[in-house]
Image 1: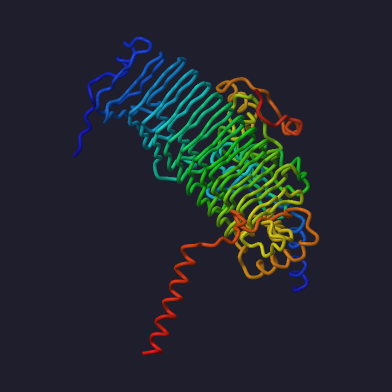
Image 2: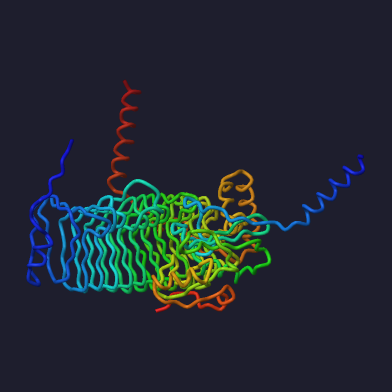
Length: 150
Length: 410
C-alpha cells in the first residue's frame, strides 16, 4: 500500500513540475507604478502594458511603444507573458496576439499613436469612430518607427 | 437651506451682439452656462463674477479667432474650465478656477499669454484629475505668475515651439511642469513644492531651466527634475532641495548643469545612458546622502563644492589637491534596483561607501572631480589691519595695566 501511495505522490510531483507555468497580469497601482522605460507614472490605464518575467517580477509600461523598447533592449527570453490593455474594454490582452491600429492623431501617453484590441473587428469598430488607421500585428511592431510623427 | 441665484445678464447674448474688438463688462454675479467666443473680444468680469458650467462641456470655449482677452472671472465645473482652439493672440488673466477636471486647455494656437490664474483641483488621486494648464501643438507661449495645486500636471506642454514658463507656483500635483516633444523652452523662477516630480522633461530639445526652486519631491518615485531623451539643456542656478533624486538624466545628451544648489537630497544627481558631453560644474552639494550615481558611462564633474570632501588645499588656489570621487558601488546598484534606496543610510552601506571612496581614488574613471572647490564662494582674503579694533584693544590693555598698577601701589 505504501508503495502505491509513494508512486502516486511521485507521479503527481513530476506532473506538477512538467506543467506549464502561467503568468497572470497584475493590477496597476497608480501610487507606485512607473513606466520601466520613460519613468512616467501610470495614470492612463487604458494604454498600460506589463511584462511578467519568468523570475516572477513584473515590468510596467505606460504605452505599447515603451514595452516594445524594453523587448528590443532586453530580448524576449526572460518574458513569461506580456499584456497590453484593450483600448475599448480596459482588459488585459496578450501582446503577441493583439491587433493594433496606428494613426498619428490617436492620443496615447507617449503619443506614439498605437492602440491595441483583442480582435480585428474591435479594431475596425474603433476606426469607424476615431478615424481610419493602419492595422498592425505584433511582428509589425518590431520595425515600427516609434516616435512622434508630424 | 441655501438657494443659488443666477444673474440675469446674458453673457452669450452679449458676445453674439458685440462687434469685433469690443470690450464686454460682465456685471458681478453668478452665471450658469457654457459659453463660446469666435470673434476678437475682451471679456472682463467685475469683481465677484462667477461662471459655472451647466453640464460636462467646457465652461468657456474660444475657437477659430484672434486677439482675445479674458480676465477677472471665477470659473468652476465638472469638465474643462477654458478650451481654446485655433486662436492667434489670447490673454487669460486674473482668474480662479476651482474643482474643474482641467483648468485651461490650449491647442493649435499661437501667441498665448496666461498669467495670474489660480487653479485648485478637488481632493483625490492625481490619476483621476486633468492638468492645471495644458498646451498642445502651439507656438509662442508665455505662462507666468500662476498658482496651481492638486492637479495631475500643473503645467503640461506637448509639441510646443517657443515657450516661457516663469514665476509659477505648483504644489501637490503629479508633475509641476511636464514638457513633451517641445523645443525652445525656458522655465525661470518657478517654485515647485511637494509634487511627485518638479520638472518632467521628455523628448525635448533646447531647454533652459534656471533659477527655479524644486523642493520636497521625496516619494518613492519622486524627482526634483527628470530629463528623459532630452538634447541640449541648461540647468543653472536652481535650488534643488530635499528630493528623493534631485536631478535625473536618462538617455540625454549635451546637458550643462551649472551653479545649482543641491541640498539634502537622497541622491543629488543621477545619470543613465547620458552622453559624455554632459557636465556638472560649479554646483554646490550639501547634505545629500549620495552626491552622484550613474551607469558605467557616467558624466563629467568639474569644480563643484562637496560638503563631504576631505582633501586639503596646500597650494592655496581654492581647489582640493586630491580628486573627489562620487563613484559608489551602492549608488550603481540603486540605479539598477531603486528599491535599494531604503538601505541607503544603513551602517553597512556607509562602510561600503567609505571603502569605495578609498579604492576608487586610484581606479575610478567616472564621477570623479579633479578640481573640487573647497568653499562655495572662495575668496582669498589678505590679512588686513583693522585700525579701530587695534586701537580699542590697545586702550583696553593699557587701561587694565593702569588699574592693576594702581591696585598694587594702593
